[in-house]
Image 1: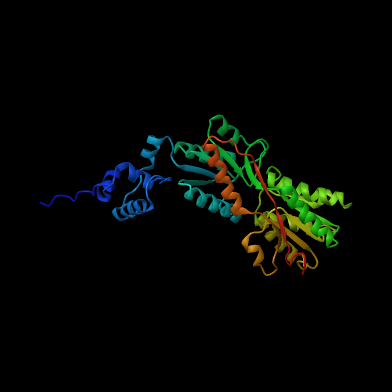
Image 2 (image 1 turned 90 degrees about the vertical axis):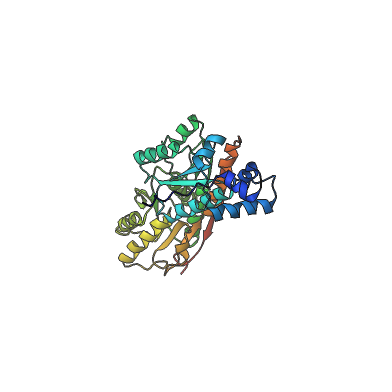
Length: 338
């Protein structure tokens, strides 16, 4: 009777050290986030051996030895939002270069979902958290701080918490000044979620610039939405275009809202960029490739992701980094200048 096949022996650091003819500690450094102290040739030889022999690092065991899991949690509302997907992509890339892995969770901007996903992350002994779904009144950042877990907010901001974001009030002002310079006077705002800093600050900057120029925006021309999606933009702009005196221009606090507004402008029989001007925010890649390219306020999404990892690593090293505000830039296209 044939004996059952034996499972292959697990490749360990000792196995690699034997084949590479170096000490186990040299192998550990070569495969770790900081291979200083050994030559690049030795580090490359060990890594090639690890790949060839099928070595798999035991993150849990490494965490028990070092007190670090080298895992970073990232909370986002939803990765179907390509703005957040772009930020997460740069976070993951920067984390990988620093020797960390990331685990991302969609919270759907729902407190119960956020709590469940955060608890799951904490059970994996993550080293820190990047929060991209903060709301006014949200306690997640406070709870992490009370537990001594480093965290950084990205894109959205909360007063008193370290964050990387865009100067959104200035971004709103840039959009208002552009539309006013073009001669628009009856301008509407699709303001997004009124509990999120991005919607609040972008709208505040826009309204302030209009008021200071002597053309305050009428209350019925400011419409909030439950989120920052295409459907919300379509519904809000449909409501605006149905007004007896409809606006000649619309500012939306997110490009996805602007994409929805395009449909409502078309459905109202208006010509985009000629009859109704439209400005979005974030300058997603799609904005420049639409049949009528969208004027948008550019956010440096990749830079936000990289900086958020840098700030988190500073905290992990015992530092206390200050919040960063990146400058916005208006990109003018055919939805405002045909």
